[in-house]
Image 1 (cartoon, rainbow, N blue to C red):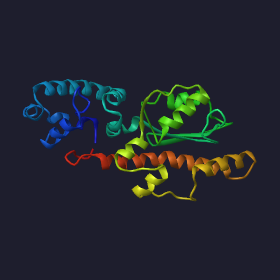
Image 2 (image 1 turned 90 degrees about the vertical axis):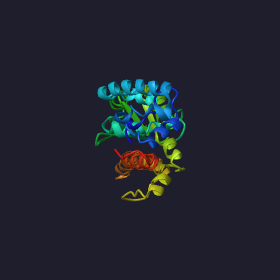
Image 3 (image 1 turned 60 degrees about the horizontal axis):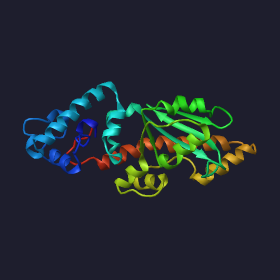
Image 4 (image 1 turned 120 degrees about the vertical axis):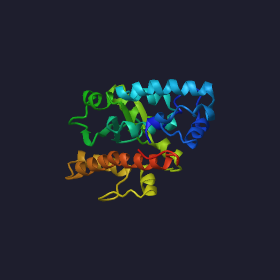
Length: 249
């Protein structure tokens, strides 16, 4: 599903009105007009026309923020279909849950087919984070709003205020609960290699500090799998959430 299938960004247009349009066969901006005012009324039609006009300009300019602000938070997943190359998937590993007592050990982001991991004591710096995440158009995480972003901002004094799609809530909207592992299992997404958890990630970092061979490589591989799998999760969940009348992108 693409932003061009959406009318919910117009002022006063909710899910009910949008679905009426879809069910009337108006599933794309190009199809709006003519008989479209019939299921929505002239006043709402004018608002939708205004949104489509602004939306076309934003789409041409690659302005993800326009749609992230126009759509309800639970519908930001629609942005991905139109801006897949602008999405930055990211995940962090830490030594605990409290940023006052714990540290960030690795940060991975995946954008437009490329993945990079920063490691504490090597290249994990505020400057690198600003370059990799601070300029992102659309951040995509799993529970990043409550954990990853506040942790990074507190520990590195960075400002990560880009539009944010937190898949924890998107998955809940699709009836998928629990952590990332549980969601992946429910979606049939398998991981190669040993079964590793967040607790293991803490252990691996401390083993790395003690000089255990292979510990850091295993931790980095786990962090990268978490991040790259977010792409598969988003695409699978977006397919679940796409309403039946709306064609696949």
